[in-house]
Image 1 (cartoon, one colour):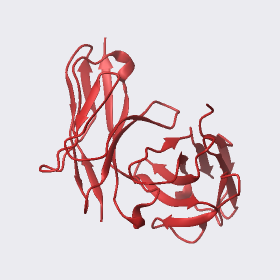
Image 2: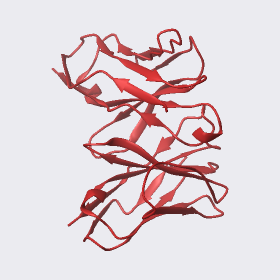
Image 3: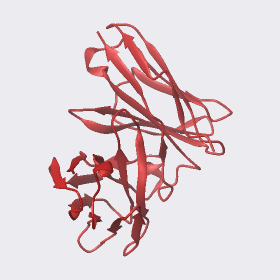
Length: 115
Length: 114
């Protein structure tokens, strides 16, 4: 079945540092890929998405490129802020009828940014 | 545009009881999905409803059930509660549940079983 693997956390960075959170996936066909962010006490917010190979999703300075050849969707940001501290989830939605409304998530990566 | 609304935000129950959680999707969204989030298992898909029909189901026991109404609002029910059912239950909506459509999440219902 479909699966998503994220780099182990937690990740601790200083403000303005470069961020990479690795995400690889296993799926048949051509899934859609997403990054979600969760702040304490809240639900998940969509950060960015990519629905086909070589697509680059971007939002709020975050970027991720859908790499079919390496089955990866790594999240990057050039300069993190304290307000970026949260839990980040990589997720996929598989192609085909059995995937209706179903997201498969990675285990989440806790990011803490210090001033 | 109002987001996904889940009620109640917090619930405390005892073992053996049953519970009903409610979800109102974004206006115009017809697909509603439910997830369970725990520290040990992470985010796991429960089921998805579209046009009042369950189209997809995760690997959970039959104690977990749901339904969807004609206005797309959804409820999930958990019967004979167990300690392990303590979790954050998240509801998400999308236009029609297609794989390329992002899901929009509510803030969840925190269920604690004593």
